[in-house]
Length: 311
Length: 292
Image 1 (tube, chains in turn green, brown):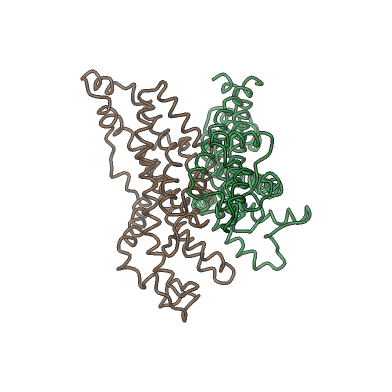
Image 2: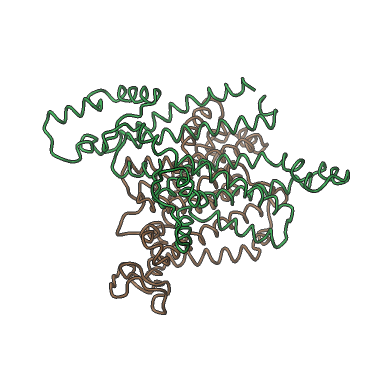
C-alpha cells in the first residue's frame, strides 16, 4: 500500500510543475502591463518605474521570473500583490477558512443526503417516491449554483434576523455564515451522487449474493448497508471526487453571490483588477488541492478494492 | 453498424422533449418576429413591473420587456454553447482518433497534455484564460472549448481502441486504404452515436458554464446580454423584484433539463439492456458542468 501511495504521489509531481508553467505562461501572455497595474495607472518617474521593475523582478528574463516564483511557492511565499502591495500568502491564509469550510460542509451534506436518497430510490424503485425524487434530481442537476444561491437568499429574506453574508468574528458567526451557502452549494452534488447511488444500488440489489442473503433470512437493513452498498460504493466515490472539483469552482460563485470573504471572491477580484500574483497563486493552490484530493480518492479505491493496487 | 429500429427511439417523452427544444430553438431563430418588444427599448415609466398582459414576464430595472430579452438572449446563449461544443469536437475528435489508433509515444504525449488540462478543476482554466486574454464572449467560448477537449478526446480514444482490433479495420488496411481514410471513413462513423450522446450533454453543460462566466462578468459584455448576464443584472434586485432572476433562471433550467433528458434517451436507445451506469467519462463531464 505504501509503495502504491508513493507511486501515485510521484506521478502527480510532474503534472503539478507543468500546470504551474501553464499558469505562469498564460498570465504572462496578457496584454496588460503589470507596471501600470502596480502604479495604479498614475504617471510615474523613470526612477519609480525601474524601482518597481526591480522589486517585482521584471528586469530579469521570464524563465528566471518563473523560477523565482516557483522557489517562493515551494517555501510558502506566493509573492506580493500588485494592487494591495502585501504578501499574497497572508491574504490567502486569511480567506482560507471560508472556502475550506464551504467545500467541506457542502460535501458532507451532499454525500450524506445523496447516499440516503439514492438508496431510498433504489429500494423503492419505480414507485411514486422514486419517480418524484428522480425528477427533482434532474432539475437540481440542471440548476446553476448561483441561481440556487440567489433563490436561497430570497427564501431567507422572509426569515427575520437571518444573517448569512459578510465577515465573521467568532466561531458561532462563522458557522452561521456558512450554513446557507453550503446548503446551496451541496444541491448539485446531492443530485449527481444520488443518481449514481441509485443506478449502482439497483444493479447490486439484483445480484446473486443479495438473493442468497435474503434466502438466509438476513434483515433488509443489513443486506442494504452491509452487503449491497459496500459493492455499490466505487462509482459513488468516482463521481464524488469529480464533483469536488466542481465544488471548488462552485464555491467561487457562491462566495460571489453571498458576498463571503473567501478565496473565490479574492480570485475574481484579482482577475478584475489584473492582480496577477493573486490570480496565479490561488489558481495554483486550487489545482494542488484538487490533485491531492484525486490522490486521496485513488488511495481510497485501492483500500476498498485491492486489485487496483496491482494494475 | 447495427441497424436499429428508429421508430422505437420516438417514445412519448422523447417527442415532448424534442418538441420543446424545437420551440426554444425556433424562438431564438425567429426572435425579431416572436418577441413582443424591442429588447433594448427603455421605458423608465414602466420599470420593474410585475407580469401583466402587456408584459407577460414583467419589466426590468430600466423598463425593458423581460420576455423579449429572454428570447433575444437565447440566441447568444444557444449559439455560444454550440460554438463551445464545435470547438471541442474539431480539436478533440482527431486527437482521440489518432491517440487511440496509433497508440505508443504519440498517445502518451497527447494523454499527458490532456492531464494538465484536466488538473484544473472545472472552470478554473477558463477563468485564467479570460483573466489574461480579456473579458469577452469570444475568449470565454475559446476557453471553454479547450476545457471540453480532453473529455471528447478521451471518449473518442476509448471507442477507437475498441474498434481498431475489429476485422473491418484489418480488411480496410489490407486493401491498402490510407490511415486517414480508415480513421475518418471507417472508425469514426462507428463511434458517432456514442459521441453524440456526450455532445448533447455537453451543450447543456456549456449553457451552464457560459452562464456562470457571464454571471461573473467574464462572458458577454454589455449592451449585449445572455441569460447568465440577465441573472447578474437581476442579482441586485433578488429581494425586491425576484422575477428578474426567476425568468432567466427558469429558461436556463428548462433548456438544460431538455438537453439532459435528450441525452439520457439517446443513451437508453443505444443501449437499452446494459444501461446500468452512465460511462465514467460522461459522469465526469456532467460533474464538470453541473455546479455552475
